[in-house]
Amino acid sequence: MKNYGFIKFACIAAGLLMSTPAFAAENPPPAVLTPNGKQLEAYYGKMLADLRETVKRLEPKVDEKKKVEFTGLLGALENVPPVTKTVMGKEVVVKHGPDNPAFVEKQKEVLAAARLVLKDIETFLANEQEQALMAKFALLSHATPERLAAFAQQGEEEKALIDKLLNDDKLIVQVMTMEGATGGNYGQAMRNYTAIRKATERSHEGFFQVWALAASLQYTDETYVYPEIPAAESLVKYYLNYLKAFDDGILDPAFSGLGGTGWDYRFVFPDSYTLEDIDWIRKVIRNYRPDLTRLDYDWRYCRIVKSDVPYVMGVDRSGMPAELSNIQKFFLEGGICGPRAFVGQLSCYAFGIPARRAPSPGHAAMARWTPDGWTTVFGPHFAFCNVNGQPGLEFLLMSQCHRQPEPYRQVLKCGWLGSALGEKEVTGFGSGGGFWKLLAFYRKLALVEDAAIKDVGVTGEELAESNEEAAPEVVNQIELTDAQKTITIGEDGVITIPPGAAESTVNTDKLSFMHSIDGSDVQVHYALSGARPEMLKYKVEAPADGRYELTAEVCTVTMGREFMLRLNRRTLVDIALPYTKGEWAETKPVTVDLKKGANSFQFTVKAPNKGLTLRNFKLKPASGR
Image 1: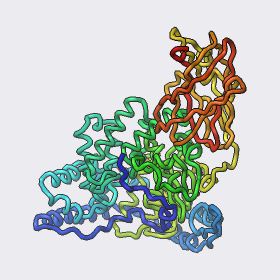
Image 2: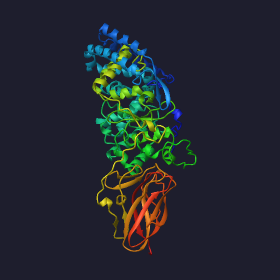
Image 3: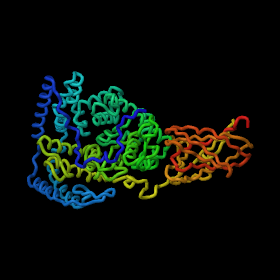
Image 4: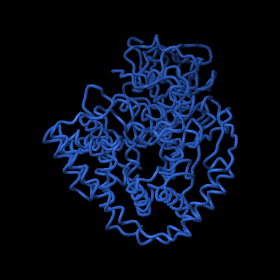
């Protein structure tokens, strides 16, 4: 498996400045335009200028008194004194946002004043006839005539992609409702989208189309994950891989119904992880920890970080097998916040759950989608993170608004009008900016308030740089059928011991009985934590005295571990555990002597304990016994 070097290991490298703008990568060096390119730039430039004037003429009349009241309150909001908060053991100065109570109270007054203005322009906001025209202006403004021309001048195929986009009002509205193309690279976005649509007709309709477009808009560099493959080709490979996983029932049940504007589908593909890693983590969770696929959504899939990637500083990976990917190496010994956040993200991506990195200064965490809203995991709240290149609070607010497509169109119209009028962008979480841009921001707050959309908060913040949870983990029990608890003897004399035949099948924080991924069988998992795992005890009735070859069917993600058997209280047998990389495999046979009648088996894992999942034990009569 190739390592492409995308993953950075140091937490400090992930800490971004909290003022990072939403489109930080939008100012590449100026393109060198050919004579044809300059003509195209002039053509797109005139189109943009004409649309700008048209949009400006749409500006509705606003009651001057209400406008003055609204803008006047903004000065008081900006002058709210900051407070000091302790975040992950560090003092942080907070001026804007929900962690400053005085700011929250003053912002309520601003929102109330904004609502009065918004009520007066309801006709403008509700008029959908202007949506396509304004969306086209927003697209041209974001793309810039120069960037469009630089792409279109490459050839007839590239120009045709731009023409197709600019002549499709319905597509333009959909594109801009999903926040446009990353970096303003609409040419590459159309190249991606066209390639996916050509690869499978299923991408033309329903959520398949929304997903194809969203992924195409999100990843607009010339390459995606694989540096030697064009982005469009890579995205096709990912789309087809996920499509097969969807058809095979591997992706999460929520994948086809993320809903809203479709914006969340921008984040179902990984930001840097290979398909090899995607396929591997799917296999690991489905074989090794199928119970994680059934958890509540805040912990679903990413719980594997807590159970199998412990927080450990100073891990030396130089001696680990070179053929392993970075993700596989993280499972061997654990790591600090970066590796843990990367594994958590990947576990969500692999099953179609939107996720993003959520770095804060000096720390790496993650953010993920749940049906109730986005949450940060293994780190502080959005207020202290950056997500997808923008301040976390802005990402959170955007995620909440995209759940309500109809009112969100009103937000967009206000913002697009502000752009046409040349207004400044909003700053300080709604404390500064141009009038229409600010009105768009407060329409967002009103939308969230009216729809009673709650901030679901953080998940596992105490685990950011620790292995200890604030509250004990809830341990669930499962029901076993008689067949799942019964030891059997085949016609060939092979004795099969299912995990459920143990004297006790009560789940603890160290030993968990769980249903297999398809629910048909039961397997047992030894947890990573704890130097003294609990015993698995069985009573086996042998038909006669004799020698048997004992094997166990196991799934492991670590190396160099041993299982210990105590037979009939006196015989100790060490059983080497293979490194199966998440596959199922049998241990090498060891020979044991059984007596006729009842025999006691006691199994445990030698300290230091590492995670292990068992599917069955088998006792095969030894030849020549």
